[in-house]
Image (tube, rainbow, N blue to C red; front, side, top):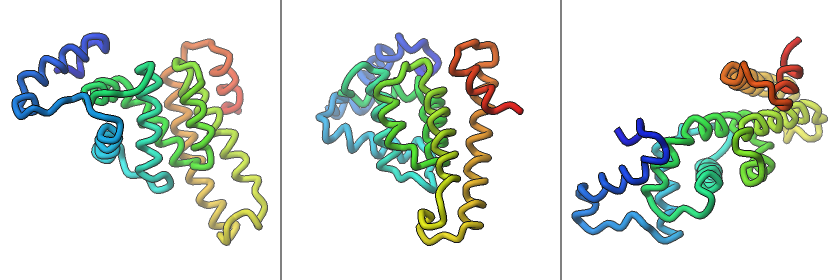
Length: 192
């Protein structure tokens, strides 16, 4: 029920639910210290985000935390905030994790984007970054493939490209009526 509420009403509703819960009765304080909250986020990520082949749980947790803190406007202090923010960000976090799983070489730059990009265009900026990084991945010479045969590397690259192409189509469909320059540039780059 709380998840269906407008985002500005969720925190109050969560606090009311917490006060009538068994967690309140046994004295669990939802405001945890930084270390305990980091442990909680790691467990939360493991329960709510799909396992990915190319980026590990620690990376997923770091990305989840960065996105939540950026949206929150500062540090997280409560497990109630984690739930409230995840309900608002679940689709965006999943999009980001799937993109970065397809192109893990973009993780460091993506984390910087999460910290600095305009939030309303974050998915577009991430997609542009991933497109550029995926293109650079294909331009590696055989000495940079880490002992992988070129045909195996190319086959893997094609499968990662297919994932990025699918996520690109999804994002463009969601923003079909938008005329923002970044989206128009992305459309030009993806259409024949």
